Length: 297
Image (cartoon, rainbow, N blue to C red):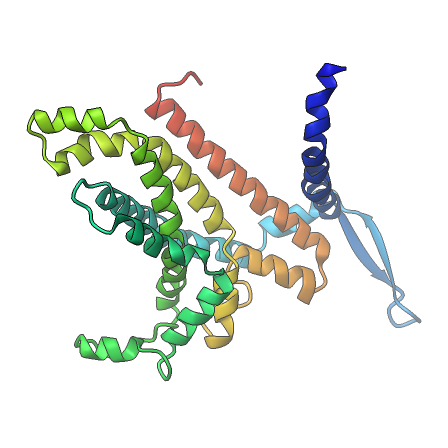
């Protein structure tokens, strides 16, 4: 009887996981293998018949140029966002960990606070600041001696969307890295200072190497969030013509499912995006495990 007690405590979490995770994923996989055929056009009421499609929907997704263009846009967006966000998070964490750092608690809250702002609210706020007639962007550029720049143009939109995610995500990653730094024994720092090491040398030789596991974790989280970007470009879309309805894979999936009523192809695209996320995440972890930690393959 005792061996059943742990399962009794775990059962609510297991039930919730199955109902809200396993069942929807399974149903999405089922939909991705089906298709709808319309019959009876012109000779009476049309009828919709659902039938087995196999991997035809996946072939359609992989052959869709718009899907690959949206994936390419997300790749460019991620190349702009992830290195900058993790670099700033690491810099802020190292600065806050300095012995002479002042107002450390206030600084942590101030840097982390944008993360608490919902993505839609942050996108609306930044979107109004990007508008030339409302926001201060053009005014500040003019004061800096630069000509007029369309912050919502076809090229600059990548930087504008990435800036929203950068503003919100840096604080979360900074907290993760700073927490990892606080777990490092202070004796290491004291011994290095006795040997004459500067704060820069301590950061480069001790702190950053000790932060490698936390940096890997934050990179994986940032990679997953980048592949799933949706709220920021969707919210900015009414403000510019540079954001089509399929700017990201998730935006295209939404359009296919609810605007074009092609739920089966959208389900297949969802499975493709989820599989790509898993492959990239676990592939990166596997690569780091083998090279950085010397683990057996």
